[in-house]
Length: 401
Length: 120
Image 1: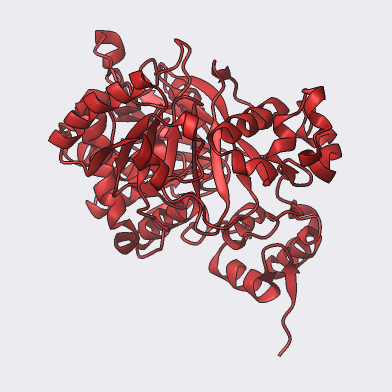
Image 2: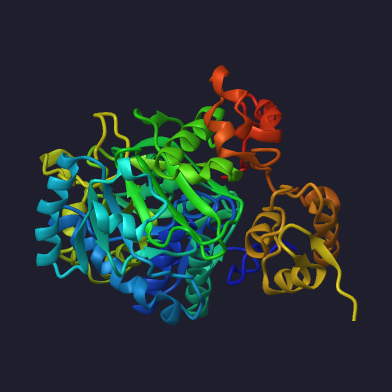
């Protein structure tokens, strides 16, 4: 008998037909399956090549905010943040959402001036944000190196959650609504006829379906190519780390464009974070590197000198798929009826709850929700890219931060 | 009543593993993530074989079909101060670097090491 792998996974073989096939059992795919099932979409299956949460969903920095710098990002991610506030109750599983606040640190006067401009937009959207000066940031983060602090924006009702718990929560909630989840089931072909998807072939058989969603994370481009759809994403490797547990010293989640890093201290006391190289590393490998470990150590010591004597316990890598504007690709594939894209994520952990609900609305009603509309793949043809400037992401055109 | 601890770092008991497997976390990787076993400072060196054997027994699988979860670097915990000084000869002698300076040469950190994760 096959292992179950996670609670909620389906024993037995996949059926011969479903109303929707979701490729990728990460957070995006599982959350979308749950939201589609809530709308009684019919028979839904999630196909996962490894174990659910094995990709970016179990490797990300777990941080949650909606205080961005454009209407488009704030619209999508604040919808998500509102869902995070009640997600444990909705899914009946504790995802350890910790509303400890999120500080986007400004280390220069220029960064602080940009933060001031963003604050006005964020307040128009009703976000719970404040602009902090040097002294206020020092009170919030007493262990932070003073020379790194010009000020920053704090979002009070943001924070972090547990990424594995969130994957399991959505999987179990989806399964209770009848969704099938098949781990270790690899998609090898996608059938197309008359300009529409018709089937998905896996290493366990052929499934006919009128709807296929590409939620395959680091493999999303490969999956789309099986259907003849070219998604303009590049795959980059990121590295992250966790230290041994230590006494509480850092309450909010912190992002720092100056070190291109992000971090938080878990409720168990570990310091968790990642930093990005100046130029992103195009790679589909998830090997960790000594350069990556050293980069994180050097940068986090600039931010928190007291960590010099604290030991790194584990270090890992994950993949992100970046578009030209670093925003996700959400919506229909215009050239192929029934084929949907939910990929190109860099901020996928925080964005999943809203993206899933909005994508489910699109798939179930055929109408694109206004919040979702700017993220369509059409933008790369029309040139209407999203000019978000508050991201802590290395990009090939230099720092986006 | 006796209690058998399998993972000393994370205080995971045999009963914890049995309960997790019964719930459905019966893949080495999801069992590791759910219980925390093998993610402590020893990186599973102490417990991984005992957990593999118990998982194989509970699921009726051959031991060969129950791989150990991938080991993530470093092989032993390393101070951030030590890592930050890698490649900086003047700093390696610093007293604050301490007794684990030797571990930065561990090949598990290098490019040629086995993948940090098995992954998809």
